[in-house]
Amino acid sequence: MFKCLKKWFGFDNTIKETEGDLMKKFLIVGLGNIGEKYHNTRHNIGFKIVDYLVNEEESTFETVKLGDIATLKVKGRTLILLKPSTYMNLSGKAVKYWLEKEKIPLQNLLIITDDLNLPFGTLRLKTKGSDGGHNGLKDIQDKLQTTKYNRFRFGISDDFSKGRQVDYVLGEWSDEENSKLKERLKVSAELVKSFVLAGINNTMNQFNGK
Image (cartoon, rainbow, N blue to C red; front, side, top):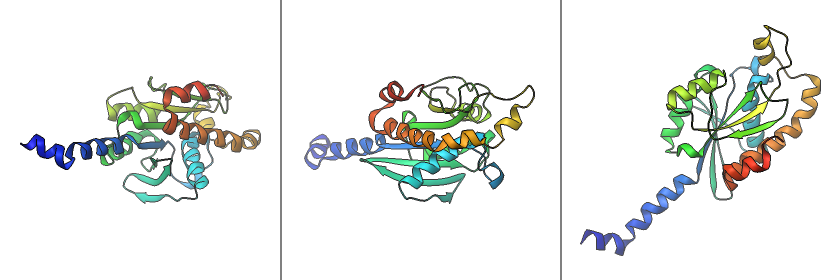
């Protein structure tokens, strides 16, 4: 009898629509450190990319638990953009909290981070991998208990002398890098939108290495 009622009143359809709505929600996390002194540093490229997306859509961030959040609508998809306020090394706490609070599937998570192993401005999207020595990714991996989450790596190159890695990563962009950054941010924003609308495989094929 209950099965008949579910069919008559469309309860099954409601459940499917709810699951479908969840699949259309995405958590886009830009990694970085809070505070004005870190604003224009290489390590904060994740913040910079989500800032670009929010400014492009003329939206704003709101300070909430464990970070700043902005919500965008793109062709029927909901993008929740997060800048964790936990500092880079504890990024996983904010990521886990907002994934669970918004009931977002793990496959709809995208972490945006800097990468020393890629030339400046090179874009690389992956579905899994090690933390590569990156403390933010290391904490996310620890809190989520998996290495299988999508990450968008933005190359900052490794143009530093021995023993100067921290200074370089936490240093500001050079004049030459700054002159190229606006175009790279535009392409990065296109990559994020493609991830949401076209899926990760199509996006990897289109953007990786560019």
